Image 1: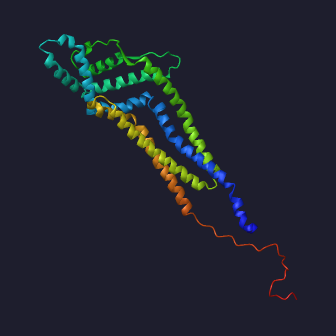
Image 2: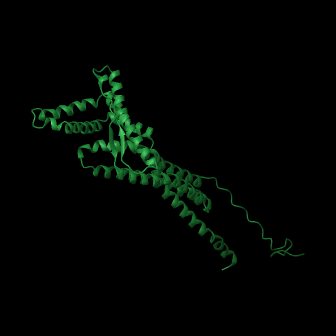
Image 3: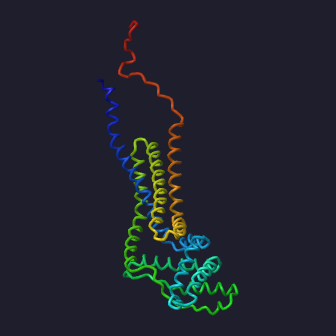
Length: 320
């Protein structure tokens, strides 16, 4: 084997470590990116009270949610009034009447006001407990007096009789026990840290993988395909999570309402997942088309061998 035949092999040898390092960096970037999107959604999307209230507001008009709320309120009213109705003639007739009245209430504008106020009050109390690092773990309770005040004001504006006589009492309603608050607070700290570092790590790995690659166009194509794969897996995770969440509910009658709440909360995450899928496929396709249809340059003409002098004697020519 001549020296000319061995030259390409020695020139390709340093490319292997670069390609391996590029592949590892791109794989880490594609792996970290979906987890970063999930952490950002959990740490920032779910803890934004304004965004949460806007996501929950349309559910006040959902029939399944209205039915679930009406059943919960009706059962609570019947439990409180149970000792008065025991062994009485109104025991059998009071239940359907109360549930029908509550279901009628859920179709009014006042219920929409109460629904929005209650969601805002409860969510703000939970987020405040999660972010208060100095406070000791204790149960989260909310004061429903502002909710009652808003309902009273709405009824008064609608000229409902005796609305101005509704008492606004400060009643503390438990939302989360102390044990759950401590566990959720630790999880929130982890998510808050991951929401900052995971997207940054994904960007660093992606830039490093493209920078060290011997063929950057192929690296960009691989990064696009990996991003699309991560977005697709995230869409699948949201779908499977919905099915598992609804399957764990003890009451099958309230599963449609829980599904509506789950869809409202994960709407942003699903949108981000589809955007990752579409963006990855677009980048991969554009990179592939750029390499396939780019203009080809003409092959360089070989230069004459300079080892021979210009006045060398060539075969078939007379030196004279």
